[in-house]
Length: 353
Image (tube, helix red, strand yellow):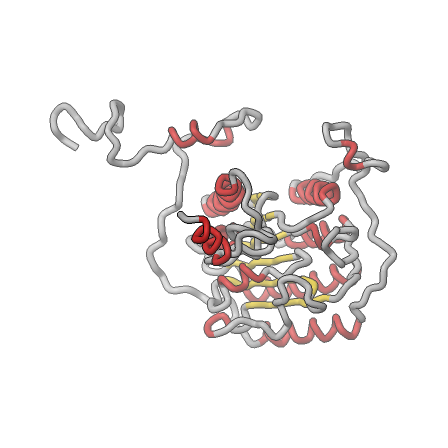
C-alpha cells in the first residue's frame, strides 16, 4: 500500500488523533474484545452468573470507524452473543461520556435497551445523547439518555440511577444485563467533570447486582489511573460480596497510591449544576418514554447461530499464573479438514472419512 493510500485509509476509519496506531494494536483489540465475547459465552452457558472484563467497555467504536480511544466495540459484540440466548438485553452505561457506539448499533431494535448516564452539552465529547434521542422504527423508546451537567454528586446520581433502572428492569424484563463501568465519572478524573466518589460509583454496581439477572460487567473510560484501579478493585469486591480493607497492601505499584495508600477517595467540594428541578424533569421524561413501550417485547423463534468457539478443555483447571503465548494458543486450533494422525484423523487407512 502506498503511503498516501495508507494515510487515506487511516483517515477513513478515524485512526490517529484520539485513536493512535501503536505496536500490537490488533492483539490489543483481540484481547479486550475476546474477553467480552468469552464473558458473554460463559453467561449463555450458565458457567457463571456474573462475568467481568475490566479491559473491555470501549463504547465509542462504530461499525466502520474507531472513535474516542475505542477501536473495536466489544460491548456490541458481547451483546450480539447474548442475543443468541436471550430475547432482550439491557445495556447500562455510567461512563461520563455517552455510550454512542452501542446506542447506534441497536438504535432500530427493541431487543436491546440502552440506558446511558453521561455529561451532555458544552461541546463535551462525543456530543450525542440528548434526552430526545429515544430510538427509531422498532427501537423507538428503547434508547434512554440521561444527560447530566457538571458536578453531579453521589446522592443525586444514585437516586436518579436507582429510580430509572428499577423501572426499566420492571418494564423491559431483560434476560441479561451489560453494565459499562467507566471510571471517568469519578471526581478528580483528568477528563471528567462529575463529582462521584468510589462508593457512589460502586453503589450503582451493587444495585444492578441485586436483580440477580445474568450480568456482564466491563470497564470503560478513566484517566486518573490510580483512581481507576481503586474503583474497579472496590467494584470487584462488590460483585464478589467481599468488602475490601481500606488500606492498600504493599505491592509493586504502591507508590501510585501515595500519600494515603487507601482505596476510598472522597469527592470534591464543587458545585452541582444539576438542580432538583432539572433532574426531576429528566425523570419525568424517561418515565413517559417507558410508558410508551410494549411491555417486555418478544422475539420470533429462529435458528440460533453457533457459538464462536467452545474449548474442549476446562479453562478453570488451568493455572491462572501461567501465561500461554499466542503462538501456542494458535496451535490448539485445527481446521476440520486438516490431515494429521490421531483420533480425529480424516485420512483413515480403510479409505473411510
